[in-house]
Image (cartoon, rainbow over all chains, first blue to last red; front, side, top):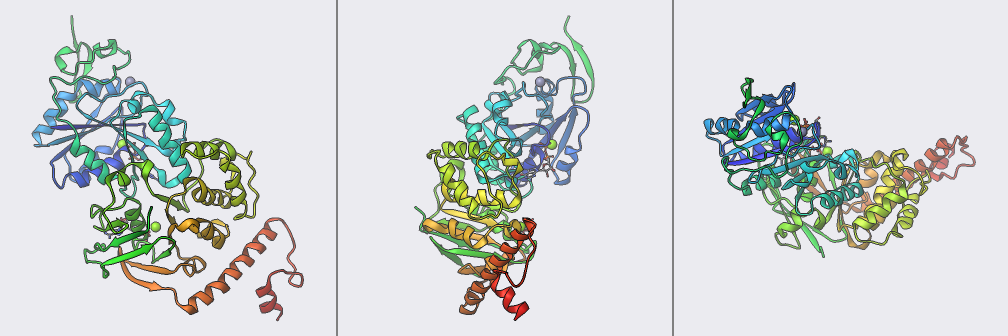
Length: 232
Length: 264
Ligand SMILES: Nc1nc2c(ncn2[C@@H]2O[C@H](COP(=O)(O)OP(=O)(O)O)[C@@H](O)[C@H]2O)c(=O)[nH]1
Ligand SMILES: Nc1ncnc2c1ncn2[C@@H]1O[C@H](COP(=O)(O)OP(=O)(O)O)[C@@H](O)[C@H]1O
Ligand SMILES: [Mg+2]
Ligand SMILES: [Mg+2]
Ligand SMILES: [Zn+2]
């Protein structure tokens, strides 16, 4: 299975870009989507409405990125149940310190060009460790500002593939669909985080980068909402 | 270098093949795109911007110099040959005009002294002076559009320029097209404005998502275009007089056609 993890600040256009891209990809592949948020979202309904199996996970009081990492196995199970060849995860996108990409997932950073040319310098690991950086909303800024923005993205992540997309018209979806196709095979047993998660109250908070659930301790919430304490 | 662009027909919104096989556009040409709202004008522009290879909703294919373009021309934003200008575009960066233009010139590997030139030409397109120490975010629609046009002409300097409905911007349209079309650029301009539409050599008429027909500007239309340009320039002058709080006198008016038609 291929796993695509999309991160980016709220309102950057993640759902819009993913919807357009999934419409292309699913001509050839079965796709499943998991949307992670903290308290509330209707994004999963937007995915349902184009007919893809979609699951919502709400992290409540757990860091949403920690929650995403912790529940990777459960998300894979959901995708397998729907015979999906690709699992697309849309993260909550709240935290500038976290980057939920793993070694073999395709890390997609969605970033809004209207937030100004200094934004790429500020956002941290979810930009600098991404494979593909999708720049949205270029339709409302000048050519010059787009070019400066793009240059700043490359300063932070020189090896990334940049796609200039438009969530409203679907521009860029074909290119992003090709990146999905080229993603590596995900291996749940061996996945590692590219960037360690910041401190909080579980083992991930103290620097654990192994993904498998057996390595985690602390206060943990499952995809199905059940919260438990793992450990001594 | 780009000598030509070819648009190979795709299908319209109801799935019917477009009624042409190829539209060939040579360097230096200005092409208009007309049609009602929803007829597919912006979609056609996006196909060209993306150098579509039968992989967009329209299934059109775009060739450069008669050949399928290299993948990196399509996908590497740094190598993109196409600049776009539209009514919706604004400057959002919190910088002065001069800082911004220097930064852009640096990104493009050009001399930062180009900033002066861009501001000079931008000022030839708008009635409201742009100063280099102004903040970008305070510029009016007309000032912003003029600066974008001059920037695309001298700093981005892309061989293909796509313009999506800039008619209401309050800039000198004829001069703007002239500035952009220098150096053999190919220009496609989406417009409902007769001043711009008749300045083009050909216009593609859109309907239901497809190119319905292709009109070549006639001799009559060219004569009309000269007249419309004069009217447009006069309107521009009167607009500036109104803006500056002047009283407009018909007797002293520098506006020839007004004098002719109203006073006789
Ligand atoms: N102008 C413009 N608006 C966009 C673009 N992409 C997304 N949007 C709008 O931005 C808003 C937030 O998009 P959404 O996909 O929900 O963002 P998310 O929170 O990152 O999933 C919506 O109103 C979209 O219609 C774009 O490329 N251009
Ligand atoms: N050839 C086509 N096939 C399918 N859909 C199309 C085609 N051309 C345009 N569309 C769709 O029709 C809608 C209106 O097109 P648009 O280009 O925005 O029109 P305009 O700019 O003329 O107002 C858009 O949603 C666009 O994606
Ligand atoms: Mg969303
Ligand atoms: Mg349009
Ligand atoms: Zn976090």
